[in-house]
Image 1 (cartoon, rainbow, N blue to C red):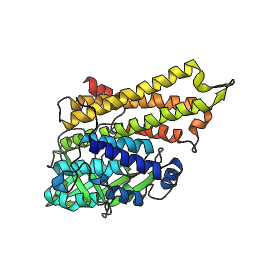
Image 2: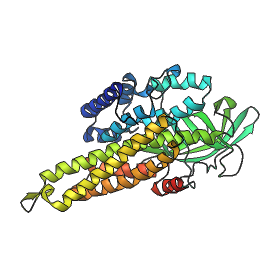
Image 3: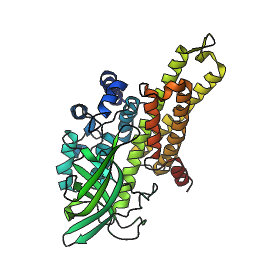
Image 4: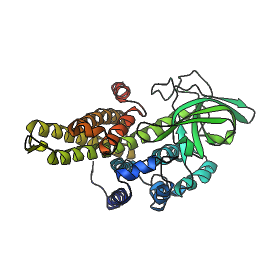
Length: 374
């Protein structure tokens, strides 16, 4: 397995690094998260101009035809900068669903608008009682002639207040936790009967509780096959986990490098903290945990690119490892910074919170350990 990057991938990494360096220090990020939408439309348009929004889409759909490895490189750099723009929601999650299962009409209507930065979309899949089970869906879609009536509530829908389109999972048949009987619908976010309760999340992003009340949508809103949405959801989850894991790896790198720099400057008993052997051991452990997570992330992305049979199990292992290792690196970074580690002015606290939220998305460490064993 070749773990080296191509020339094009190195150029992609360098362009994201330059953007983070020029436009995304922690004070600028704090200003962005304090705005009503919680992200910058100007930055989003810049992403479009740089081709990042076209990265994972197929060339026949107007994209660049990038691989999961390319997305991993991008998301790792986004993780280093704590980027808050809705790339995961719009490009990775909704983009994957449309690329894999969208009709020709849906692709023609939505994908070009995502690529040129004029459309924000989000994926409404989680429900209050689901506890990481993607097949646990109480939201219903009842056929009524040539249309469907959608009723239910989705929880923690990221960037719903800014979205023009919502991809929603609903049950069209079967019991509440059956794998069969799930259908995906692409609906307008301003559709009559959709209500939201918006709130900030602990990591500085935006989410909403979204309620659908007798939303009537045509059969053309169905993404994929009726009752066959579980396979699409699984594909979205795999790509989202890879992206989140790469983001987490980027965050871990900043946490351990910032901690090393701080311990070189902070003096105790007439010596820098970095002189103390026990702290050297601790920071070595932080580096090792980060390196393990990065290595497995690269392996999982390459296996997914190759569509290997081993990819699914490796992705479960990856999500478990980045959750466990991210917690270890974050907690030690905060501890070694002392009380400063939890202040809003220092970026350590922001990485800590983001990594804890990533652990809870698409299944936490316990969930994926059980899936890996099974």
